[in-house]
Image 1: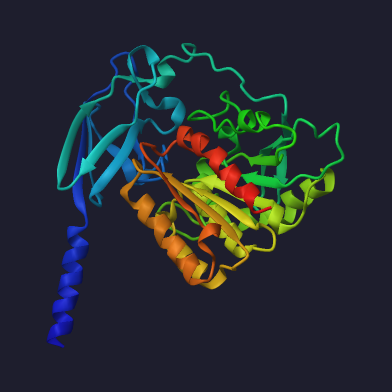
Image 2: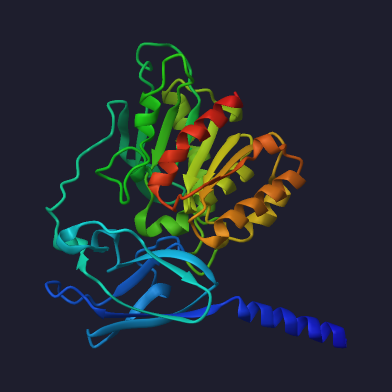
Length: 378
């Protein structure tokens, strides 16, 4: 009994020591901006949610915004917003700025100021459409009966689609706003169309389907399980993919319908829901690309993998070494679960990109290697 008590005390002490207090104080906001009622932290610690009440700073008579948060020691990136990415902080004259970075080892107080808000310069940087001619809007309001919503759906068709009679494998991807077009991308674009356009016709071509995220509903729709961040709607979203969207695509386009030629892919929360959907529907999605997965949001995903993973599935894991300190360990933990289920190592590569952060640039950079790995399985 005494040993058990000591063990419990050690576990409790370790748990408490694993958290440190971080106090954020903003002593100045842009003079030409109307003082906002709310300022939020969006970063690698909350999946870059720009309106997360758990990370809202408290307003002290419009003079100082402050709050103390609890975090595990590690490296983090973040920015301040006023509740959305159009109102994110920026540099003087509206220029974009790099993510703020912090390395936490002990209780810390950060005192800073915000230079400018992006929405003060709506016409400074005119965005242009960058989607290639092979990208089309399948629908601006595609029905999602499982969620009682509608959503824009994008489709990329290979250059020779109209002139050939070939069938093509399909990649289903989340966060459609950020895949093809700089104009709609909140953080830039993946540039998937530019990469696929660069392929020679004798190389493997793909149809790519992009599903827009639900913005404020993104955390919920990409969460398989309830969490402190959202009540889960991931199961309904996954059902939409296999019950409504895929049957429509297979009916109206020349596709290989089998799991071997059907892939699901996404980043961050999109990586989490891709993992879940591939586990739940292995006879539909034979491959999954898991870019910078937010497994930490839904820890039960590991137990689900222990129950559901099948040897025929393939998973590609990738992240940058400058992301959250949990990213690499989380991917390795999932890979270990899959290896214990009998999946061969070649079916579950874990790729760490040196010097890469949690952003579209990283996912753009690694997409060609993911493509090569995916094609090797055909």
